[in-house]
Image 1 (cartoon, one colour):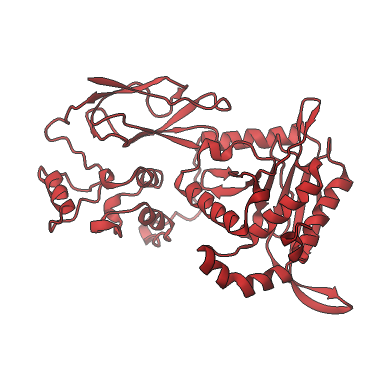
Image 2 (spheres, rainbow, N blue to C red):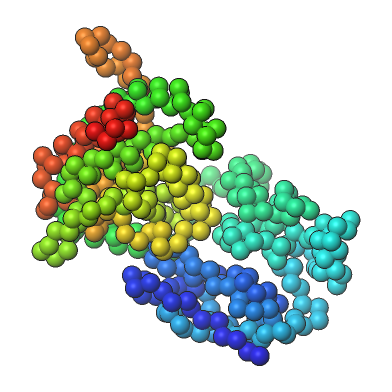
Length: 407
């Protein structure tokens, strides 16, 4: 029985997608729910799973093609088996032997042989990492059950420093090489939105600095107990999210957005957190941040960061958002002017913490200081509102007990 593989229904905000990678070739055996092809949209990469066990009979749209919702991608022959001699272990360096599947099955049942470390043994997320990083799973030491290669093994392998180049591989002195690489859909969309922001709103930035001494002391005093109680570390970002949520309640115009000639006031604080990935910046949303605890925020941010690295952020994660926080300090940035993410009207920029000399009660002391910035749409947010919002955040973080009391 032939089954059609189609592009899943795309959200209204996504008109089409580009075929990034086919993980199978015509004639390859496939398993139900196995990822067959990655579709790259303007925001995320979508996986299209196999609807049943069988063989991939044909491919209707090759890598690089642009497709829309419901469009035919290929055909699976349900229940069929791959042709004799077909090498399904595409991740192995050597030719697959006829007994490889039996050996793998035997290992699964407790036999002496471990399963082959090929692409077929990887999870969908693991296959995606291997494909994107051009990693041969056979080169990776597995830490999973029976020596299987896990997604985490592949990520660690990709992040490991590359070995030093040998003398013959070194570039010739004076050589001037160039490489032209087309933008990914995500990078092109980021570029488009940044130009849209620059050209469509009257953006202005205000700055301040925050003494994080009391927050640092609280983290030192309660950090260990917090981690034992909640299983996550107490970071700085949760303090900034809580402070921003409280300040947005008191300065609702900063949480508003423009729609034509209307201003939309949001009665909730859905805060987008900028997360950097190799493919570009994504901004998953902490929904109803005003109701989240410090532990909830820390767990959500860790989850976002992990899924962003593995390509697991979904379109639902990115939809909405009434205000954004971005932290250039993780890369060492001391000062910057963040760009507003339309249709939002403001963005808060955090930066690196530096111990600097300040005057406190008439004495010069060293304190952990951070420069902060708020970029805002001056069409609806006056300078006074932006400055008072930033001062509100400063007051909360320099007196963290205030945010615990909703002050």
